[in-house]
Length: 377
Image (cartoon, rainbow, N blue to C red; front, side):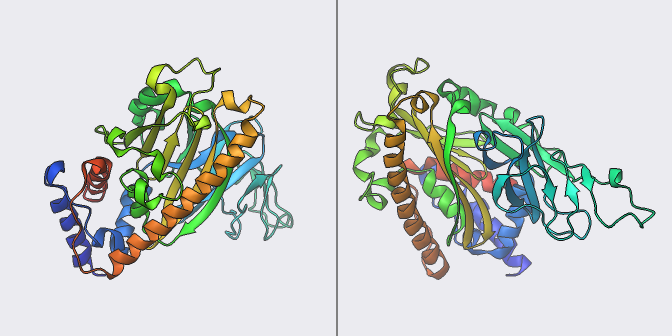
């Protein structure tokens, strides 16, 4: 892919969003398939924005940690001895081995190569075999830190030191769903997956319910009435749409002990896109989410998790109900994987141009505008 082709992909996207929404088409193929365009996204989006590492409730004890990578930087996110959340470089300051893998709990960060050891605040604790190097002083060594904030229970990380606080950037979303008390929901599961599709294909799939009756006909397709789906205008930092859940969907409704929600809100689910890569299905009783990071034009890393609202955590039947729900969500996720991988195969091999968008795909058009606003800056 040449520089000219990358610029042409931006030009195609620019033309794509220059029309009113009621005349709009899906994004052009090169925006999904171009390696050059992905490199621009990494540089101008993923290196500049807040990305979600998961839920703060999953790192509840000192030493709890998880690992991630942003723009080639290995990162460890952990709860330190004072119970503060930290994001630090996950690379040893000696011979540059990565330090921790996956997730777990540790009393200290020990390099698997030469056992240089760091405290949970990133300061060096010990470095065996270094006493004869007169220039070495362990107090000179500390793992570099990255921006890390908790926002409504989400761990948000950025490698950009100048990015505005997540609470500031997402203040409008906080006001929109603040009455749900999302910060008190507790994660019950978290998995890391790899799907063979472009990250934007999966993002767009999550942010519209137009596909639900067909793609999910064997699971939740009959539960969604497209005539009741609301697609309000979003903002420069997020978009959303809403659906009302039926009475038989026990965990999707507000628990009898929930006094925060009234009227229609007691059965309303918000499907939220936090740009660029956090996607939340928020119901009164539970939530599930995807956090996306691109690995190649046709490969995306998916952090997949979910859990319960506090009222259901205290309900003696909640574990049984959530176990059944998890099976359903897994099946829905598998259906989405099949659909989005088919879309990417079509994008790579197809000869047709993208078609016009439905009124139910307003979030997709807003997402295209967001991508252009960052990549064309």
